[in-house]
Image (tube, rainbow, N blue to C red; front, top):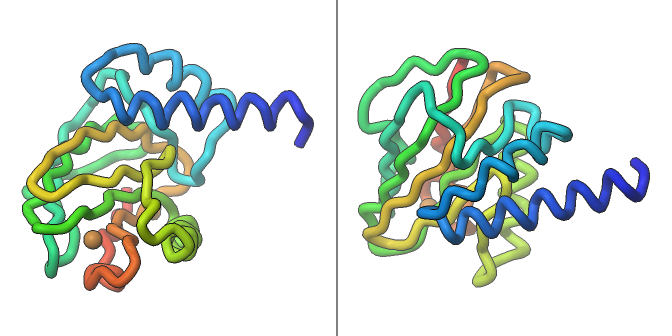
Length: 163
Ligand SMILES: [Cu+2]
């Protein structure tokens, strides 16, 4: 990987992180364009600000698996807006990726206790709050969604999607 690409990747992830923090401002189309130049995940890319094909409501809670409020069929190439609500008393995470990426992410989260933050493919949702996360599905059709925060009981009960 050359230096220019590395710089672009780091700029892209910084910009996406910033847009996650300011999720009411719509300057995120630029992030999406930047991300299309390089995919960070085998199962798609963040698409904040893009027009969604589908909306999926997701419930995070303290002692239950992450779940979709209603069954929704997601197809390859869909742009899906996830509205992620944390009904628990503790912060939880919504992380998306291939099975391998989620395992890797979980290992990273173990190193980040107390410093958890958003990434291109994950958001932290505080207790009793809701956040939006838009994802453009493409690439591999086996997709894993979970909260991977250290010690959380849902660790072994991910949502497994087959698009
Ligand atoms: Cu959790």
